[in-house]
View: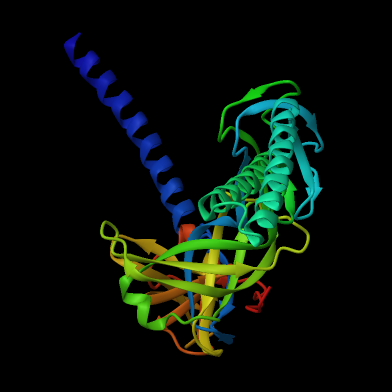
Length: 360
């Protein structure tokens, strides 16, 4: 009985072993005859020369050329408002009036006192000619007249300050007061901004001070108008450095004819510090980055099959989607622009239609 069991087990083992061996041969044959996957497909771009001016890039803030809060020099109750929020005004335009009834009455009293002082002085002047009055009486009358004149002038000046006018051409912001409101001296009434031209203030590191000069061209972009460039010139360079940042403050005067630039806007700024020069460039999409620096996949065409070589490069400025190549590549070199994800150093690749590396 035990021999039959042993023979049965041996037979089963032989059958299954044969089946497994046959399957193994089939799999091995399929692997040996399988077509390998095609090389990765990439697009390429050539290193080119472009005329680039040497520029410094930084960020800054738009600042109005003139910007104040309109306020009152004397206290009083608002009796008339002659402007609306957002209104354009000219220098000297009447904006607001304070109640002048009490102060006008005081002026009328000072004018009456001046008339009396004029009569007294005139009488003393006549008497002194005939020596019918003393010199001291004459001098006292003259002093009283001068004092009366000064009182009238002072009261007129006070009344004039109760008529608040625009100190320069500009646009008024949101009104902060209401009709009939009592204003203490120096109360903020509304902001007034002269929007054109405007200013842009920014900081540059100490190492760039020697490159800066009054009149250099400045190009500005803001988030509100990403497709527009605003142009200006360096107007002023601070004579000292910020003690905390070791940076110099620079101010540019910027054209703003359509009043698009607003006070407080964040600005991306480029300053042209030299004339245009030939620069090696690539699209930023062609450059890879890691902890060791910047790299590209260089296309080699030594044979019919293109291959890629992982190449370290040194980069410089970025400008409008392009990047400056300082070293590691030469004019005409071809690199991978898209399709990096499956690449390894030395592997073959298929090249799609090349992209053109030209200015946007």
